[in-house]
View 1 (cartoon, one colour):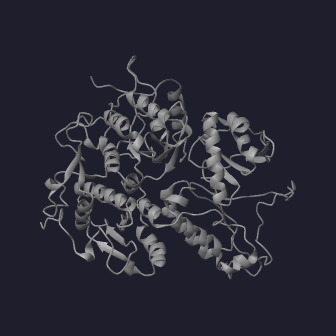
View 2 (cartoon, helix red, strand yellow):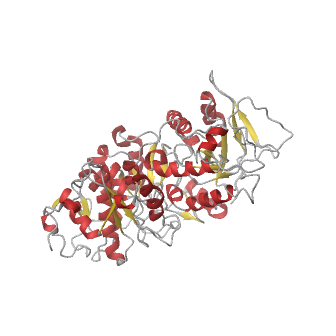
Length: 589
């Protein structure tokens, strides 16, 4: 019998409410063959001991069916190379999608960051896709046999491809179909060891994502570092009473994150009903939700951090542009997960391995005027010249209630796809204006940018690029931690011990980013707990001083402020703390 799921009870009320009012985020036989010194990916050239950079242009036109399996194999290889020892080169891929302004910047970052740091364009060697995969299989001669699509089955094989990625990352094996057209006669797949056959294994042959996820978790979970959710193409619309157990595959997936999956050995999966606690058949539990609850509670035997970071993006159940479980915290009753929004972001494995991690005190957004001039700041004729334009973090400053204070915060910086993509356009436009002292003699109006703390480790040189623009903008801009600090989450819903860990991580991020502020999103039922239990944890340490709140759904009132009240003082509950300020939500879209 085909089992059908639906959402019932209080969850149904929330979804109906959200549907009405929510608009939130809202043969030459390459394998087994020795290669020439000039094209050998197993080592460096004879002229240098440094790791070279191989660039693979995947912007070529492939047929849809062929392109995605080739993309998967290439991204898997890139992740393994970027994770490997120094004897292997770094691998950088170009996946530009001109239809998506958040995913068309691979050439930009190559030209803006990589080439200047390496000295010249000759440091990058370009390689054809088929040749690269052939040499990759020479160095990693193992594969995961799988089907991307199964034309002979009613169900779509893509449902278990996220689990195939986990297997490949743990086993250092490349996902390969038998008949990938990109290989043709170049690669003799019969010579490659099959580490796992997903076309015949009992947990995979039925294309049931629950069976596949359970098998991989039980056998390999402790060998992974964190969760990752990558939608292989499921319909993202709100489920109805007539949904099948597994919804339709309606699109190809954005597979850019695969290289990071392989570098970090992320536990990758996608359970469409993993966050839905109810079914419409009495006595039949939702296996997907039970499994996701189990994994969140166990954290792979404690291998995953607490709260559990979830890479990728859970974009199921899209309502008017927002997805119900995207922050992850409401997914299971443990309330111990949060998102690192990174779906579709390629080259994170490259930037993490190639760049040096951002260190404490490297980000200094409050320098004196001499330091500003050394950094190339452009000063308008009417600007102050004896110090920073607007001194920040002055604990002796006195609040003047006769004045109106305004801070403009640019949101959604937690999404790494945005930071790699369209935010670069915004920052470039901002820099052009700030340096135009003729038309703007008073300088730029100060802006506060939310920016993902994970850039410091996943893409440190991308973060340094943003910092360089702040410097030449005369330090008018500053950084603030994005929703909701260390992770995109609703932390007031988390258990107390998990909140303590979340606060510790967020405070570490604040020190690194030279900020005392955080944007905090909370589910609309959790504001009392946020004000009375969670925010005092920040006040106890005295590092986070400003908490800029956003309600989810954002059109609902928090019921924590009177009509003319715009902030509240949060008192510490421990000695040695300092007052924090909880600001009333004021979001403009």
